[in-house]
Image 1 (cartoon, rainbow, N blue to C red):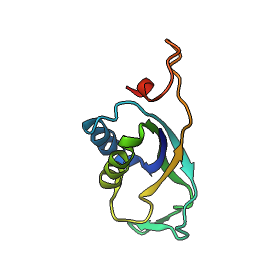
Image 2: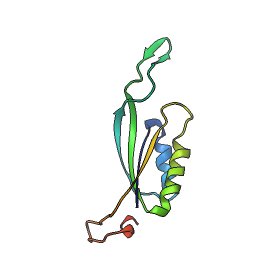
Image 3: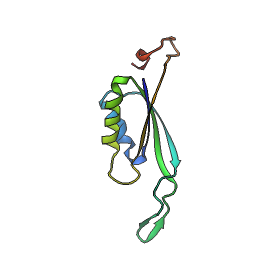
Length: 112
């Protein structure tokens, strides 16, 4: 099993959520987060400069079976991208075990 954590633009959340549901990823957790990025200069909108040092993003935590890792990552990459600085990051880590609290089942079948 894999844990896929991704930080995306809040404006792309609906598109990412819809795309994940379309490929069969129907359960994940998410949080609103604020972070610091590599971009150091602000943006100017209608002559007013805005700081971009504090960036509003959405953090998703998704656990999938190994055979769904690539599909999930490809879906996020395609649906979250704008081509601009600040599109986000994806982190993948190994999950050693998973338990369903209600039944006590363990293993990959708990994700279905």
